[in-house]
Length: 428
Image 1 (cartoon, rainbow, N blue to C red):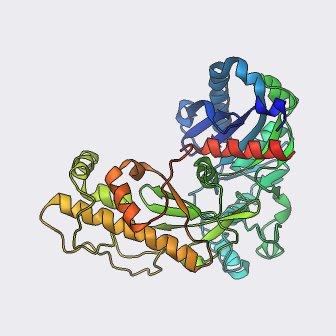
Image 2: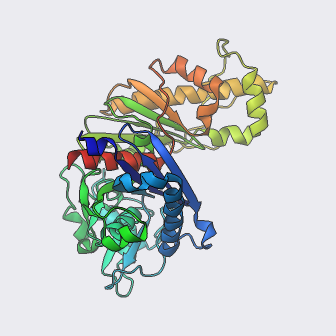
Image 3: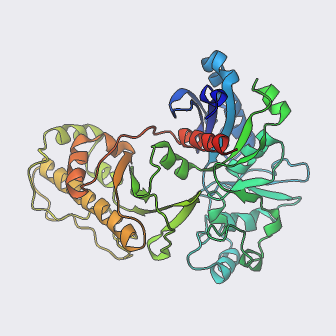
């Protein structure tokens, strides 16, 4: 690393569902400053790209003030966006109306049927909320000349051209990460493939900052703009996981596991597909168990109080598979799978012990299932989400999953985008 890079900083930007967060990161991957702003501060319509940009402007202005003299050391920028959020541009490269958000379904039956007919079974483009379905809807808008993912649009604003995407945001739009191309079958669905940008590997330089944008944010005029990723991949990278076998569990309302692999894993019956990050792959799966079960039975105060009084060295004779309703996709694929929440003990403490033990067993099974499907053996584990703060749950998980449990470097997706910015600078 040159002396100029040693003193450089990068800017990582996360365009989330409720707002924008940005971090400054040094060459040691330390976050030295961060700021955020809410979309709701600028308007109630979170689908309006203008509000995304206003929120970003506010965030960067706050960050510039916090960073003070360090602001001039910014040498690279990368952006992550919400996977599946897309918008169309007109001939003047301006957004046409509102974006389609990540969870907005496309309900036209003929669109879904075309995708079902032509998309390979293992493609991530299936489903009403896929990027490909959104492309087929947005392309019908009058004057549509380009369809972009959320991160592509923000990246384009920084570069001054809307030519590039990344391999992660493009996956659900039908991109083939193995052959690294938009496959021919996309056109067979009647989707207009020519409207799509060109995906680049996450962490590659796509160009230099547009001079007007540099002046707008009081940034250096030679800053490198680096291809980004999805919010989910960025959140994984932010933890510091970087080696084959590094796993990250998200203990939120559901239980989500991801692991870095040396080969892709595609198992649509389990809802598993793999993002490509350079020469590594990131497969993952989501169970219906998780915090939603806990909050159904207990308040936050009760969870805190009961957890403190449980001895993780004790055992309970309860074989739970905690679900709120029948049906599981991963690590067991059975739409009629029956929750196991019986017998229910008379005291809440033992019941909670059983629930957490059951969820820990599901997590262990999830990593074993990824291994069975072609993923690596789990070598280390990092944890994000609200459940990571429950030390008793962590103690139970250690018993079920006997690998080193490591601290996370950051729980902010923007820090993952910043790591990609560093990757771009170091490889350019």
